Each structure stands twice: as structure tokens, then as C-alpha cells.
Length: 105
Ligand code: FES
Image 1 (spheres, rainbow, N blue to C red):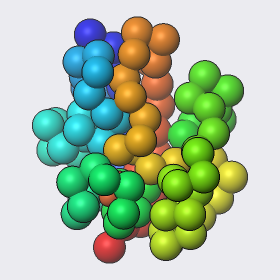
Image 2 (cartoon, rainbow, N blue to C red):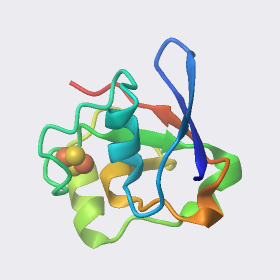
Image 3 (cartoon, helix red, strand yellow):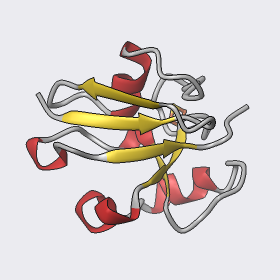
Image 4 (spheres, helix red, strand yellow):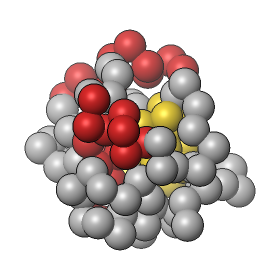
């Protein structure tokens, strides 16, 4: 399974194995990563799964589509690296991915 490292707001690292086909958000919830709330359950409506993709992984992860982009406007402290983790599907090419949890409330 791909390994994903989640870094929380305090800088704590959570190295998690996440099954292919799950979303990066689902991997965070399954591993009880603090700060990923996912209030809408992954339907791209709430922005509380907001995280910053580590710069080394930007190209591999890619950009948000138009729907995600609109929902990201609801997020706190949006940055160029912002993505909604419910919209990123885990694949073998994301093995080693690092995401930094944003301030979600
Ligand atoms: S879980 Fe609500 S937008 Fe991702």
C-alpha cells in the first residue's frame, strides 16, 4: 500500500499506509490524523479536508478541477499548494506523498 505522511498543525508526522482507491482524506480519517474533519463526507462541499500538498509532490498530484477550485474558496488560508484531500485518489504513484494539514474548522 502507498505510504502517505500527514503533517499536522503542530508539525507532528503521521506515516500511514493507505489502500489504493481510497482518497487521501479517507486515509487520514482511518488513521485518526488530527485536523482533517471531512464534514461533508467527501462530496467536495465543505472544504474541511483542506491540506497543502508538499511542493515536491505538486506535479504528481496535479491541480484541482473547477468544482474543487470553487469549494476551496471556502477554505481558511488558501494557498497555491491547497487541495481538498477528498478529491485526491490514492494510487501507487503517490507512494511517499507528504501533505500538510490546513487549519480546518
Ligand atoms: S470532505 Fe468535504 S470537501 Fe472534502
